Image (cartoon, rainbow, N blue to C red; front, side, top):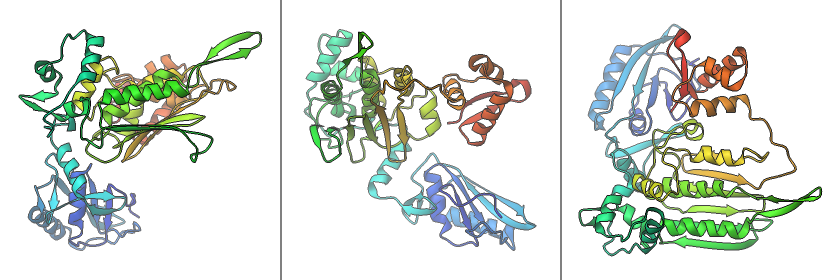
Length: 427
């Protein structure tokens, strides 16, 4: 049996047919992978009678049918005394890669064509430009909200075109998308934050705020005002004392909203959604992770690859976010004293941060060794096992087991050899 099953990165083909070219397009467009010839879908080895002829056919078909030409490697491999051919396709730098005029993506174990929106996003991702660096069609924009923030936070006296160029909101005499998103009003339907406060069930609407067609700064402020309305601190009687308590750490919520506004995709439909419940708040942003960032790196490493570089820089100048990808770590730290912990959901289409209302009846639980190791490695460029022993206080054998498992799971990578081995988050 072949050791790998079919997936978004692996396709098994019993024999050579032209359908493999769709998968070549998909792998070159998104993340790379391989196609194995001479193996049935169930993993049984069938073999290729003439591997050299098959490799020549594959190379000719790719060169004749895929544009631009993707990077690939062909190898003949022996399994169960039978020869098979592996075609490894690398993620290209010149996407979209087209087969018969269409670009494809992997959807589970099949290759499907991109729609117009996906094709536009793929073309943008293949350039060095972010969405907010693109030119805007807006010609008359006002920035009273932005000017007020700049006066308050950095002491700017007056916001003129020169300041807008310095901030990256104008290029020459043309506004960029960044200006559109930070203007007092705009025509971008994706520039929206929808906030709903539910009652005991999702059928009970206690409050709602639709922050649309307005500055991201206004959306940020509006989201904080709704939070302050529903999650005020309170006092509880503990013995003979009245002690102040909070429902949800405000700074954790603030970080979640700021990150959603900065890192969401503005070239696809949908709004930032804030769902408020009696026991939690969920902040959901459209768009999944930026290209090149794994879920592990996002959750455990202080890595910052903003999807909207200019918006991120403006929020940083206004002291609304840290610059170096510390948002998730800061959210965790806000919950450190409590048993209730934040939860993070990551998929191809969204990122959701769940902030629970603090349960003061429960005692804080010790963080697991695996979680400790991931957080420590994520906050350190490279670290060895001995240093991990000193920091965590755990024995060599315990750490070796955890490190080995995390390497096998692809969450961290091992660098060097012998006593020079170090570990880092795998991106």
